[in-house]
Image (cartoon, rainbow, N blue to C red; front, side, top):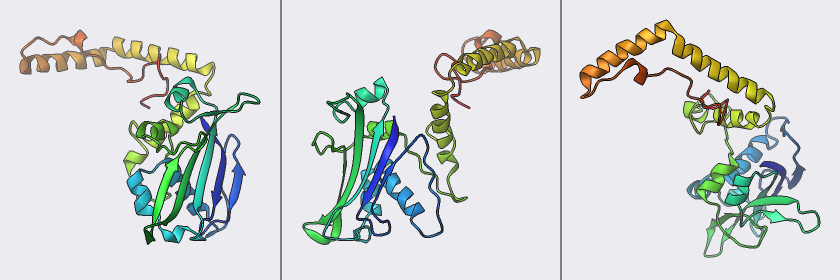
Length: 238
């Protein structure tokens, strides 16, 4: 799925906005015009835990404390797995059967404590106020990378890192290239298996493992190969 619409109302640093998003969205502007503030709001909407929402949002975020501050993103283009995961939240338009999913973050002054806020994040399409689950947030796949050297390496690399997310996004656009890349991976693994140098390494490792284990480890019990399974993903584990 992909974002096709973003809106913000009553935020202290950003004027109300309503943006239709195409295939890509680039945010440009001078310093101190709200670029980082908008990314912060999107990160709160799509990537933060409930605890983070309450730690990072306050009365200072409301331009008018008498009204709610809202951030909303609308998604389209779902696959079957996403339809199953959001089966209660995806709306189907009666006119053309088009599908959409709205995710809303709303911040209001706490009725019992005027110095605090109440934060709600849900999918408002069907009227139910039901918090998003961890699995649903994971399926949205939002990743926020601060433009600083202090960004942790784990946010870039690893099974849930930004690089993996970007590669997964590109893979759906490979088309006929995917089969060719998959064939290359299989051929590469064949060459690894036939390599004399790697074969000697496997033999030495097997001999040492056999000394430390209660059973005999043979050379053919070991393999050096790419971790990617071409049947599943040609860009995985890269």
